[in-house]
Structures are given as C-alpha cells and as structure tokens.
Image 1 (cartoon, rainbow, N blue to C red):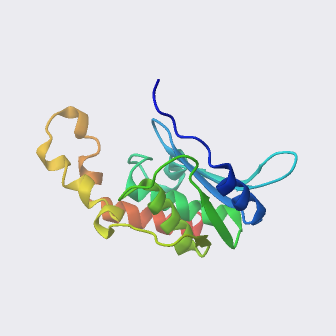
Image 2: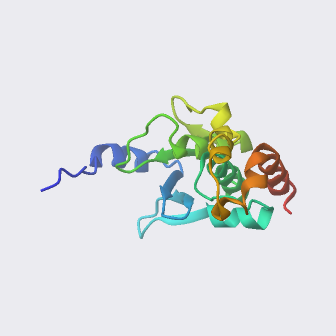
Length: 169
C-alpha cells in the first residue's frame, strides 16, 4: 500500500485555536484556488475565494496555474477578503522551492495581509514569467501561435492585470 501522509491533528488544533483566518491553497488540473477560511464550531466558513479563472475578468489570458497567476490570485484574494492577517493551512502538502503557494502568499502579503509565515521564498524572474517566456521560443506549431505574443510580453500582461485588479476593472 502506498505510504500516505496523515493529518497532524496537534498542529491543526493549534492553528484553529489561534482564531486567525486560514489561507487554504490548492491546485487543480486547470487552476489554482485560494480561500480565506474561518473556523466555526458548526463548520468552516469561507470568507473569500479567488481562482485562476477569475483572472480572465481582469485581462489575464494565460494559464491560471503558473507562478505569475498564483501571485495575482493572492492579490485578488486579499482585495476580496478584508482580513488583516491569515495563517497558511497547507494541509499535507510539502512546500518546495518555487511552490505556487509562496506566490499566492506573496500576492496576499503585497496587498497588505499579514501572512504568518517564517519566509516567503519566491524568484523574481518566475514572478514575472521569465521561465515561461524562455520556454516558448523553442516551440513551433500552431498550438503555440495563439499565446506566443502574450508570452513574449508576459511581464506587461502581468502588470496590466495587476493594475486592473487594483482598479477593480
């Protein structure tokens, strides 16, 4: 049988006892989803949610599950939540270098939410999609033609979308 990670109930109980809203971030096949959740005895209550598909309303036409999108999702979540602080509830996930969770936390922190964590490890080049734009020039074919121009200008797309989120457009 596959070795499964188990819930650390002591850590979870301490997180719930703190009374600080939790930042819950998950990745699906097509998007990153982030929630701010409060504990209630009758069941957790979601205060706010943002996901990669929400970014389309603000002009983001690229993937909703890459590092730049994760940052934008975190920033949008901060704008929607009206909370002053949050603690990361990573569940059984292990945080690795360049994890999308760091980018969500950075976006939330840049909005002004105090994210209770020791360190947010992000790479500035990944934040602005340098790793994405360096991948595409080597690719040929029609499947990339629709996004090639946007990928080549991904930093501009990122900045435009961030401004649209800030201005509520």
